[in-house]
Image 1 (tube, rainbow, N blue to C red):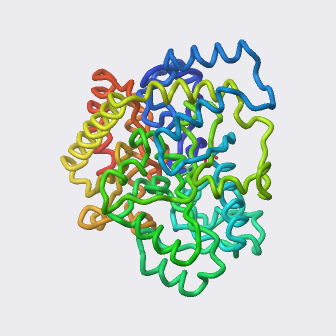
Image 2: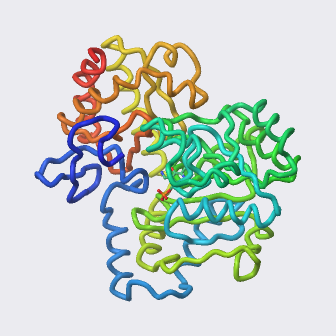
Length: 415
Ligand code: PMP
């Protein structure tokens, strides 16, 4: 992704970032809609976060022991996300999902894992089958280096398709340890779950004795204070309780923190209380945890209102610009995450799965992206990624995006 493989051209090498802006090695400043791939909800280099990191660094970089700060971060998460009774900190989203899967297998004493096509859960061996993110960009079915025996333990199902999921459970039910799902898919572009899908998925899995791992690495603490789970918990008809949840990105405020959490009964199967091994030299690192605490403390209701409003303003303006140039498209939303799907099929219908996203007129994105970059706006360098706003996007930054959109839409139209 960073290499601009999807959009072509020379990737920008960035040297600094502040608020809604990033600056490259040649001194050019861009309004940023990548936000470090999600963590920077407050904007880059928020003074409260930087100060917390500097303070923590002054007390030592890594202790390899438990710390009070680690407990404080866990308490902040548990206060926001009710299904999390216990939390284990790790350093990356990949580790969080990898460990959650091992835990689910240990707890159920079963081997098979179900994932959805186009969902990305990091780069561990069993999770690269029909994955989103960089793999969507390259149209890779998986990765070299993954043994067939390991890949065979992952069953891939079309997203938002309960019939397909029911069929997989009918065939393999007693061997399925867990279903892993992005709480709202955002690594094939944004594809939200259909209303009630997550709830029905949990009921189906539980009926077969399988666990559900809801991956909120990307959505957690971004789309609401309680992530995607929190949005669906507001309505009885869609509320659900996953067995395990995974977090990353915002929970570390731009530093390497991620986590897995869930029901105490399951979490206690992790070492040292239980037989499922998990460890990490840098887990709960005090400097990284300081950034996470400062970010979550600052991310109050006003921040989420601002993120929602900014996402609405930008997505509407860009959509209007595309429409004015006759570019058929559809704006996809999951809370304040959004992305665009190009082509008449998407414009005319619903986009609910990976196959539909892959059939789009994806070639329109590269010229659009480069026109925006030329005008000083840094977008995610692939049509298969979400756009990320920050609470630091002020009127000036938003205005630059809106001003840049018509020329970019023209470039997309003539592609
Ligand atoms: N799960 C999801 C939903 C993600 O979006 C990502 C990263 N984009 C990961 C897991 C992996 O996280 P990391 O890159 O920190 O390993």
